[in-house]
Amino acid sequence: MRRTAQKEKVGEGLVRRCVAEEIGKRLGAREAEETPEFIGLDEFSVSGRRLYHTAICNLVKGEVMEVVEGQGRQKVEEYFDSLSDPERVKGVAMDMHEPFRQVVQMCLPQAEVVVDKFHLIRHVNRALDKVRSRLQGGNRKGKRKDLFRSRYTLLKGAERLANWERERLNRLFYYYPELKKAWVLKESFRAWYRETNRSRAEEKLESLEQTIANSALPEFKELLHTLTNWREEILNYFDYRITNGFVEGKNNRIKTIKRMAYGYRNMANFRLRILATNPGCEVGVSHLLT
Image 1 (tube, rainbow, N blue to C red):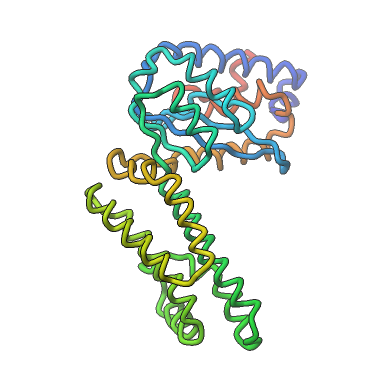
Image 2: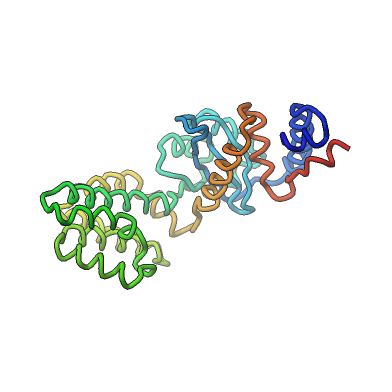
């Protein structure tokens, strides 16, 4: 916008006001749209600080419906209360964030909370990496470097490994049976999400939980509490198959906007710029000044 202001020989503030007004008009025309059946909630940080916002998205259309400050209940609750037909919502995808679960249960009691599968896999990956880190701090000094160099390879899906990566992991697994056990658990969770039937998924989850309990891996046993606390919401994925993949993709776009648009320190302007990424809301700047 700064370049546009310089090109048109007007103040940057004028450009921002024109863009905000146009985006507001386009968004206003969309407010009458029906409430979506599936919604996504995902928090993101901005400005390189512990300053969080929450994106509320229409998972059916792949659009951001609203951006609110914070990652707590109040702002999300206010938005849900404003929905034209809240009873239409069937499912809400989210991370395992308790305030979000509470607000959905209160404002959308008929909707099912669905834990985003990518978020759970991140928990599993984190447990695997903690095992690697613990072993790296052990006594086999000659292998510490190999463990460090393999940290990303361990997290890759087995189907994406090159032959040399498989060979590297197999060498590590020979020296560190615990690491192999943790890696197999990670791959087992990935395979579990490919299950097509909820009943079978529930049975296999019980088997995974038993494997963890018998594994003697303290890093994975921490995961058992999470699985117990969010069990129903995790299994709801097999009924609805919704994820926050789209939301997190939007959040990457949001972070790019924040890095590029240093002037968007004002929350209202920042919100409008994010909502302008929706199809049909993109705004060309120069023609607004003519």
